[in-house]
Length: 364
Image (cartoon, rainbow, N blue to C red; front, side, top):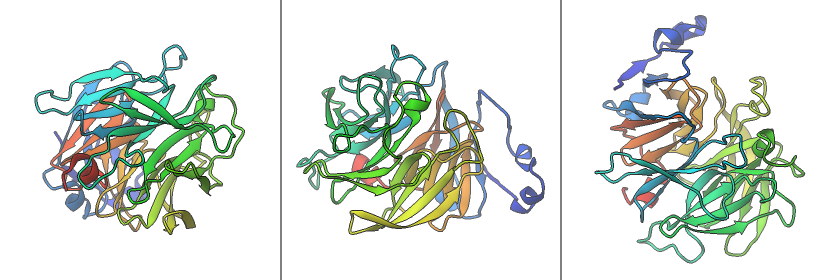
């Protein structure tokens, strides 16, 4: 169990080893988690009574990306990490959220889904009503040497999977990474990076690393942002006026921390275009991967030592500190699940509510 630990920034400013006095560092198989407050307002965001614990520590990397809830099955769907073998493609790890299930695990693969990565809950055109929940999960399929990188819609209640986008007007994507559905227009905003190539299961890219917007109802597609090293996680602010995009160029064939580990913010114009690119935050550990906002506009991102939380002005408020890479995480009602590849963690009694919790869980 954990309680909130205040960080003295003045002490940290002159002592690079200060963090080791607060939490155990340099660990490869962590068993504890810490809540570190870099700003006094962190307590009001995470909750004064928040506690954290480990649910699983496995011998394979089951908890990597996605983390999408489906109301019909009452389960959370997480993509595993690439295991380095085309004969052993990426699994989807399923976490049962039923009260009696005690977060039990299973895994599956879906037809038409080669190498899944990021994902989002998804209303196909014509399915959204005021009382409905998203019936499908939309996966970024990184593809392989025979399957193109694509957006694949899966209904987890029926296991039916359907490709909805397989190219940019005939040009192959590199390795689609993460995706969000705009809650008003239904458009899909997604990133394309080179990680399939870096991990040797995709050919070398023939298209720039970019952010796209796609209309699943009309088929229209457009590039909305370019000039990234490796665009990765993305997220809308709760008022839908800002798009956050992470650049994880610090990790390519190997880690090079002189390259980007940065969150950028863009203004969204008429729900279709981006302008006013600016640096929002830089991760002091690793790089910001999965990105989500809470309903107050705070920006959360999985980074090199856990989940970092910034306020809308870009001030680092605190960390859910694991000591190892947290690629992504998921908001549940009153909880946050954190994915550190081999480990699964849960933070309970959380005050902050994820931007999409109302839509996905019906808890507003």
